[in-house]
Amino acid sequence: MLRRCVTLRRVLVELSVVEQRYQAVLQVLSGASVTEVAGRFGVSRQAVHRWLGWYREQGLSGLADRSSRPRRSPTQTPAEPVAAWP
Image: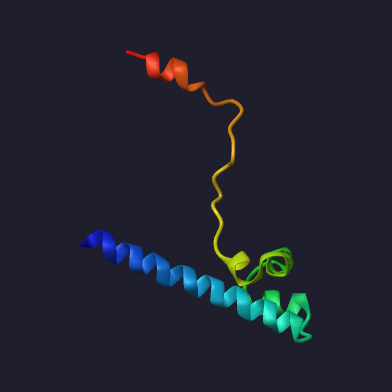
């Protein structure tokens, strides 16, 4: 039951982040400067530009949180030696 509550909370927080980013994008598209919008939302200008790019490429779904986990790790130990470890 606890896991269900945590999942619901995570969804609500994620929606909030998407909504905030969407509001920032809408303000820029309405004519506000990126610098003004970044100041209002407490983020860097680069972040606002990134959100604009994501919105143009993918629409509203592009504004969702992304994983910060690297796609690959070239220095990671191969799976075979790890599996053979006693």
